[in-house]
Image (cartoon, rainbow, N blue to C red; front, side, top):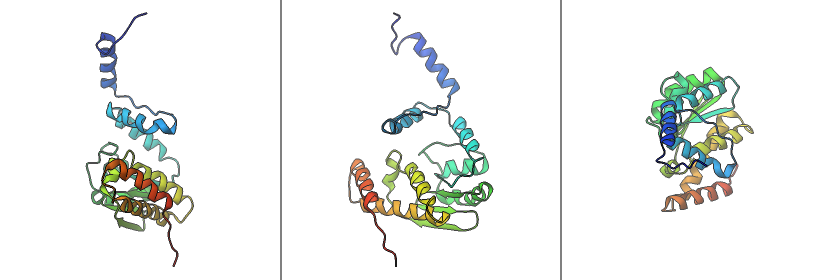
Length: 201
């Protein structure tokens, strides 16, 4: 057997090769491991441009909704910049002008979240605010909003359904805001989201 450690030359060579190539990896794993797997891949520097190309390829399909942070949404809308996960460098207000173009071009609902959320079908733009800034500290606090928006949009009238998902998500975060610690907030948020009810007039 030929033993290896982190100080082995071959380990250094392989790591340098990885750093130079920055490959994209789409990992299929169980849901329990998905969050940590994504965090690990982002932490070690997998390639965002390769990820961007996968996303561009997905846009050839008719999607129900696209929800993203400002930096990634602008990259999708005009093809510049790149995705950086939760590390958005722009605001939702800055992304708003790109939002309608993306929605009109793809024929889907486009949404961006931030202090103010914008949701549009390319014609009608809806806005809302609220929630709690600690959603960005949960992995993946805002990313899960995309999944939540998708399931609600598949059952309702599209822009309004995505806006409803954003509003319910923000309300659950607001109700959870009494929790002082981040992990306690995350648990309280899921708890509130699971029991939130609405009244029809």
